[in-house]
Length: 117
Image (cartoon, rainbow, N blue to C red):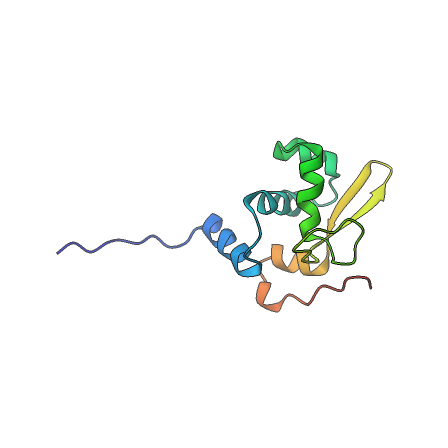
């Protein structure tokens, strides 16, 4: 009898499952945009488009799924994990406290997003 060997989850699979648990409507493009933001906090939407290979409009639309629901231009599911603010370089993307906790792998202890505060 042959017993199947199942590999443990790696970081990529764990990240995909984390996003699936966070919201079932999150797309691969959303995940890519959030991960680039985690690795390069303070990047602009133009920077995000360049590093991800997205069109500028796609980068903007994609990252807005992680904005607070009451933020200008927020798109569903509006999870409150990033804030997009104007800067001299363009619209800058920064993680919220909840976004940092998610990035750091503390999703079970992540606070509810303090949107609009």
